[in-house]
Length: 406
Image (cartoon, rainbow, N blue to C red; front, side, top):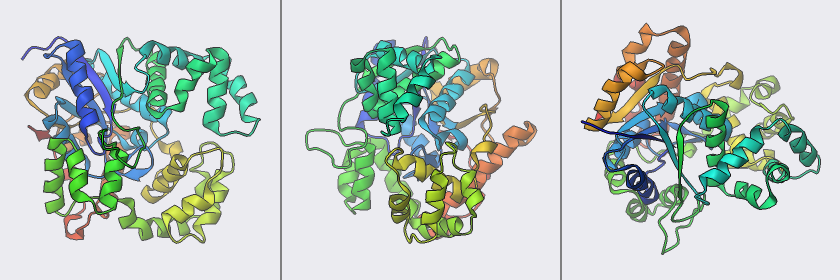
């Protein structure tokens, strides 16, 4: 099987919907129908500090059935991390293959050159001092960063940072620039509902957030209609097996119990900003009886819910940011089709890090790789406790399951 180009997509597919299918199709319209698509996809936990709706293997299988060729795992320390680290982890995975020559993503603006200019501004030597000045005015971090970037580019261009997909695209571009990566940037104008819109408009395809909201409301059939067909099929299979849908609320008491066993110093280890946010979270954890109450009590004007949610998730999983590795130590295969298997054969010669298709193979790798896989395995066992049917939550699943070959 011959392909001339290989594009990479950094994603969560939580769940896969028609907007994701549009991006997959657009990549092949731009690069040719023979182009290969490799996804770096989050595992069981996602960037906003939450449980994924479906386990990693199910979402990866749906991705391949929906048009991707190969799905590689974005490991947990990058998947459930701030946008900058999330983006850098995804870029590391794609660069590690040695075959990807383009990075594709959706954005509100569809202007890759503008996003690269903003990325260069945020990486410039002048930016930290400008950001410090703007933060002193007391606004949110996002507003201060936008104003500081506008002083290096233009206010109009910096306004692109007010939209979530543009912002993530800038982080992708930052990661490429910081690593001097020669990948082409392909940004496709986003279609459908806004990224975080929880109410689907009749004339638009629903966002992933809207689909999850529908499921929480018990509107299952409506949610399934908004999923990509392959994802809807996988969802039904997972639901029948007692493994879907997965929501953090199913483990809420376990999460709160974990927080109440922690001392203030344990919370401090989770606060990467070292700005006292951990004290608010510690105090809130002593009284809150739900995760949402906890977040509402601890939230500040400057920082969004996502940062607090990640701190809560890290606490539940026993993660500490200081323990996170600097580099992705392996490429774990989650799913592949025939073209993806051809890619894997090529990657055996081009990849800069080991490729894992069998879980036991990690035991032949270095200590950092073994420790990361063990962390993933423990986290997968905790994730399974949120299954609707606990009889499906048998531990050790990560050591037993290989990739889905489709």
